[in-house]
Length: 270
Picture (cartoon, rainbow, N blue to C red):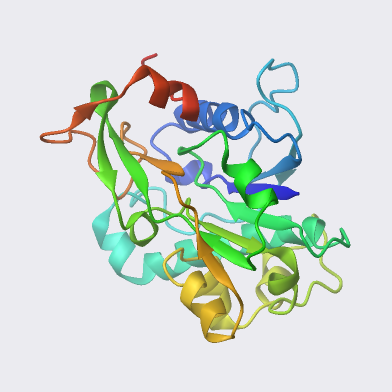
């Protein structure tokens, strides 16, 4: 079993929350197109525009809505580099991390030592066989090191250090995370300040809230890690809500029909 967890950035930190929700819809279609149906999805957001309950391609999705303050002011946006590399970056990690923990508080109730969780960015795409591979793995945690960067006009570039750039890359057994977070007393109605107290500051900001370090963190603790052997995810850089990638890829290749099908690629103009 694998649970995909997606957190949506605050509506005050979007150029257009309607656009952000459309990107989420495209991501959910990709996530729900798994060949192995032994999965579910949790989405955490500050406002739910549509739960897609009537969508023919979106299944097994639970929405959690929180009433938390935006991590950055509405006039600075998450796409502002000054925000990313100064104090705002820590606030964004805390916002993302606490939303992930709130979702995990529901997942950790399931008593299954082979239950995995994967954090997926709310605009990316994943390979249709990812759940199939993970659910047959004997590793404690996995990372995606091979992926694609998607640009405008369905162009792409290969990425061979995908996990250094994109947050859609870490897959971990829930049992490992339960050892790092105190879920006692936490539920989907818990205020953010209470959720902040569940994990050590470094784990909240740098492991849950930042995708670059979970693999080495658990590796240093002696757990068994592995690598997804195929191109497992797509970093979507095709839109203005993207805050760290560029959409115009020089010298890029055109997506093949097989690639579009494997990842259920759909951009805002499709």
